[in-house]
Image (cartoon, helix red, strand yellow):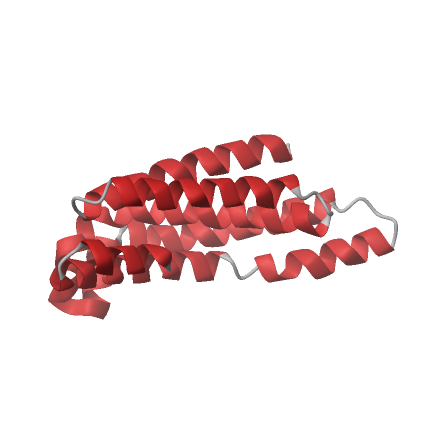
Length: 172
């Protein structure tokens, strides 16, 4: 959400509107991919209450969420040049080229969010701290690099990639 506010601040109204459409595509990836994230806390808590190791439950939820995330990423990211003009007509054309990279960035962010939610439910507070750190890097990167939409897309992708890799390795 902060990225749209930055876009309104840094870009002309026309370019900011184009970025808002791109952000809408990212929200589609995030919300569809996050559907199983809401099950993490109750199911992990149930397993811990029964004295079971919750790793297996999280693994199922994580890979299920990954499948859902990449399914929607394929639809709106990889094949977005076909599907999104059906929904948004010609208004979406200026940002169609950013769909694959931006969609992948949001997909990685979504999966990172699942890891953070799981670790937070296990009372391991370093994970949300690391996620907050990477969020601050995104804000700083967008503050410094904002000549055009592609700058913001590259910042979001770079930070989301490093964040996901870091959290995934820590989670192993």
